[in-house]
Length: 461
Image (spheres, helix red, strand yellow):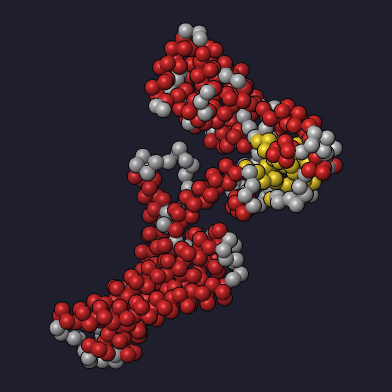
């Protein structure tokens, strides 16, 4: 489908007053496709089209419109139309929309909301952006435990237009306490007179509103849930998180972790608000320069260590130093990335330092022997090309460089694996231990290990 080709046709149907045909064409599409077509209309045309759509479809179409189109709409569509679309939005979509608005626009639109909607926005503001309470959905299906399966299905028919999902319905006790849930499938397959309390599942998996969003995404993934109930500390149901929210969380966290591991400051930018080619050069410099500038100062220490031994190193010993440092840095970066990923997906607990170090020591030990051998062979090959060993015998030099490689690879691997675990234990973000940072530390330790090793094994170097 090419949505932009249909925009003139939609405008023509609107101009001719063929509203029934207009509604029929649009409602046969997915709301996302309909939004792609309608975003090309003028504000007054868009308002006229949305006014003829069914309430739930209008709500979904508006949600899929680009942010700039949504903001233009609330600026020019008129109070009645704006109030209609704001009231029809689901709670999480409305909160996300308000978060993007300037304070002045928020102040103008807030009085258009119902008291419950205003209270919902205020309650969300008490949570951090990465906590479940800031993005949970309050439109969930509720059933009485005494209802029959037939009565429950009838109740869901009435609730469905105003709910995010009816595939899971939640059963509440006194005071709103969550006591169970029942799936739509179970209701359909049950005998008409079976009671919900006999059908519901009571082995509940839930999350609290102040939990981290990554915890919610992990539970949805681990238990293969369509929706995850959110409760307060008294066990009362306050909202749900759906599987599509989990996808968004994973994508957002992956973007932020990628930027942090790449040494880019700032959080990931919302989809639709960022484009690599469109981002201003100055903004990219602001986001990328701080870490690199900090590490450039750190590398002064590395240069100082190398300079300390420079007068005693010549020829092949100096030439092989960059290879040893770079190889160790890559090993450290690998170890760090793997441990960060294991921490993120729950394969490794933050208190498993000994187990991780033992595992990495065995892996790095084998890699160190392999890389040490390669370093020694490289030394012999370089000498054959130059045909002029610097001091002592070339065999002794090759052994010294190989030993330095073994020591550096082991230290870099343990450093790369240990650092994220320590940061996690200190309640920090392991992804902040970025690739440039690990590489810089490994460069310093690698230079020191190399120079100390070769001078100890080759006193005349």
